[in-house]
Amino acid sequence: MLNRFTCYRKGFLRLHISGQGPERFLNLCCANRMDPWDVCERGEGIECRMLLSHFWKIRPLARKAGVRVRVLGRYGAPFFIRRNRKREGLLLGTGACFALIYALSLFIWNISFEGNYHYSRDTLMEYLESLDVRYGMRKNDVSCEDLEDSLRSAFPEITWVSASVTGTRLVVRIKENEALSAVPPRDDSPCELAAGTAGVITRMIVRQGKADVAVGDTVEEGQLLVSSALSVIDDNGETVRIKYVHADADIYARTQYAYRTEEPLLCRVETRTGRRRFRAALTAGRFRASLSLPARGELWTALKETAVSFGRWAMSQAGLDPGPEAENTERPVWKETTQVRQLCLFGDFYLPVYWEQTVGEETVYYERPYTEKELKDRSEYINEKYIEKLLQKGVHIIKNDVRILNNGLSYTIECTVTAEEEISVRRPVSTQDTPDEEMKEST
Amino acid sequence: MFENIRGQAASALHIPRDVALGEPVITVTGRQNVYIENYNRIVSFHEEEIRLQARTCRIVISGKRLRIEYYTKDDMMIAGQIGSVRMET
Image (cartoon, rainbow over all chains, first blue to last red; front, side, top):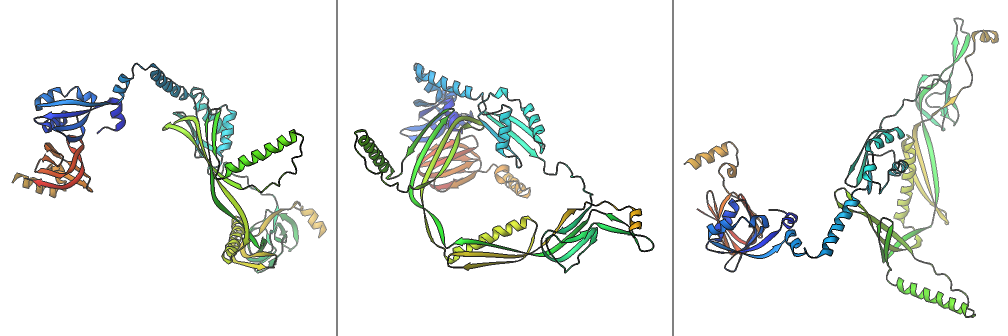
């Protein structure tokens, strides 16, 4: 069975078949690959639908089956065109419509990026604009190869680009470099390791340098952990010279973090009143038309305000004192959500027509005391955020405590975290290796 | 006899009977649709009863306001209020 669009395009007929053997006629049609559809009994015979192209071939079959075929209705594009062939306006309009669609299909109306994680869409769009690749440009003016080359050279992290124009859409597929683009040069300059934070050392592995602390020691922030100075000793046990090396070690310590924050006794609650207002806008190129529907009761308020301001203006014009202006009442807050859709005829055929739909919901705020659960949730949320920050630093959490204190004016949320982390930080050493002679003289 | 041997061969080779023997396949969806495959021809067509000839049997579909939605040489979709689907030899 053909789909409806094909049937309409090719044109079809509604037929009434009567006579000796309508069933035989149906079988003959089927055997000759002319399949009627929607077959039902009607009056003395049967009724069915058939394509116009098949109808011209059924005369011998009808004669063979001994049936009479009567046309009940004609449907589809061929009949529509024939019926309206004298309506010039309609024909012109249809032609103009197709011409317009064709003209619009010569331009780019949609630019999409795929596979970009590091570079945002805005960054890439800005760059394309600098290359004069923008919405509304002719498709023929887009050189995909040049665009690919420019993108590759402008963004070093992009390793592969494919630009293609499909329909009215420019699709830029990108593959970014996931590995490091360059290996950082190894730093061999003399340096020592100091404690970045205070804590108790739990484990340490020294690869280069001389350890100044041991496991179990309590260290302060900035305290030297691994020295870069290595003494070179001769056979007599005397220091011949001091060699400064690039200290390298993994030093883990148990550290403490404390965080406290003040929260007001009342929480601000947002609630919707249920009043809604709608706005719709249609943008076609540079033209924009919008329609706003006021919320229930808002129209009356707007009219009243206009009337009052007009009255005051008229009184002032007539030389009368309009009196003091009424106090400005608090206006409601509207939270709006806008949905923008671009007209897409089919597949990748986008047109420069945008439909915007905005729904505004009236929102009011009020304050009320926290419930126990809310306070607990809030403190957990604060704690989680704090822990998240610590985890990003590569800290391993051992213990985590949260306390909520009420001092009558506000809540104090205290988070205490015990963690284990790598505490060493590099500190450059400005000294040079001492020559052997100087060492001997000094000793 | 010959049909029997073909049937046994089909089951031994795990070939579906509709493929090997051309037996009709009837799919009934609710009370509204009957889909028939492997039929030969329409014997009679009425609003209350449609008779079809298959290779091995005759299929009788009874009901109310029956109509053929579409049909080809191999399959047919019947719509309407289906009352019964019967096989006659």
